[in-house]
Image 1: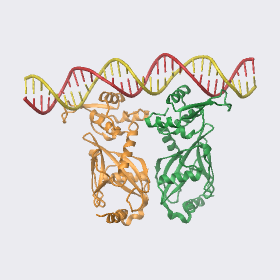
Image 2 (image 1 turned 180 degrees about the vertical axis):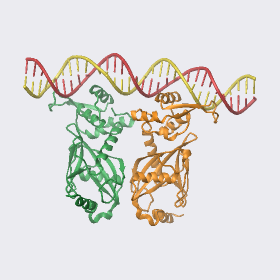
Image 3 (image 1 turned 45 degrees about the vertical axis):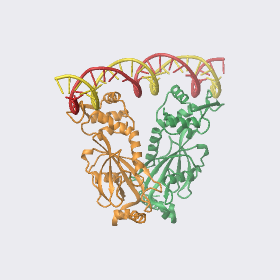
Image 4 (image 1 turned 30 degrees about the vertical axis):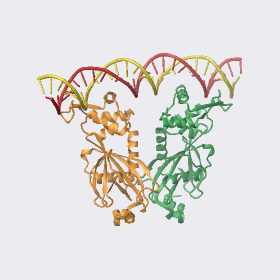
Length: 246
Length: 246
DNA sequence: CGTAAATGTGTAATTTGTACACGCAACGCT
DNA sequence: AGCGTTGCGTGTACAAATTACACATTTACG
């Protein structure tokens, strides 16, 4: 597709997507979601593939007249993953002039980030603009459309700041996990490596973990213990204002 | 004004304000600013008085087609205070359905907070919807229109979180100040009282203060020393990532 | 001239964070 | 079967940061 066709295509984007229902949406306003999950110890995000452009972006959507912006974010997340009632929080609004579809309608985007149980999500493209929706390893994801790389960076920054204030561990590891796995998550989010002994000591002292049993045999040498978050104690710790950050 | 008239008035709000230039603005999108300043040791915010409703709100404005949302915030701040190039940062976007003018067009608002030199600002109402613009003591302000009380609370929360990361002291105390004054600011922002000795020690150890001289005679008993921020060292401390929070 | 209010200053105790070394279990290789 | 390698689990000593705490100085006011 040459650049002229691309421009025309981009100009059509919102019209195509919204079709004749355009009047049901707030013009110029969108929501984009940075959806985090963990699988095989890696932090992953959900991306959608744009059919015509053969590029990837964050899942997003437009704000209906009859829903709040928060509800838009929930709806987007539900449509792309089938999940409801998950951790979902606004982190920044992107309003520069040069963002979005060059040549197309101007859009302001409210960015949300979600923490999601990887195994429960069913990635689903919209089938109109996008033909694929799937998890990507955070390190190793492709370059994204629009300003979505900046959005991911900023969402990660927020996640980092809120590591001690939000139920990040609990939400991303709803089931059993090992301390090395949890540590790897912390290291990915914080962008630095942590001392194993100090990490384990801290996590134990928080009193929000229950040891479940030995991990039988994954692919490790010595089998690590399995843990589970004690949701009640986790909530208490957050209420007390305990820092769960490393 | 009875409730029916009020509704009609509210429905007219954006039309009145934007007049025939409505097409130059993004519909349904606004910016509101929580402008902080310090005077006589108190943290203050700038409010505007709505002529017809006889109520107060945060200064706000609409987003022009040809400006970024950040630029809108700068413009609002400039129009209401005459100030340019001040600390101004987005803190949250408000998108519920029940916010704003009941019965009127729905609006989503991007909230910004500013840190401003009280003595340099010239509060100015828009003269259309509002006939007065002035500083209010944060504690002692009137109830605000719309969801602006929530906005103030949230801006304060952000300020609290960022006390250690942003040039809050430097921006709110551009000139000479005393340590008790600075401590009072910290106490207002943090919402708790601090130990004078520990506070002074910490501030001194940060190495970002210069003692200027004795405060002659304000209205205190023993005259406190005057200090000034060393802007260069302040910036270095922030870059090093020193926590300037108490 | 005494009293009350507000300011400045340092030290000890506690808490928190950081650095660091070894034994154990499983796998793979020979 | 034995040995080497990899990954997991645990505790202690030191450093840094935070917290608690008491008294002397200055000035306004009566």
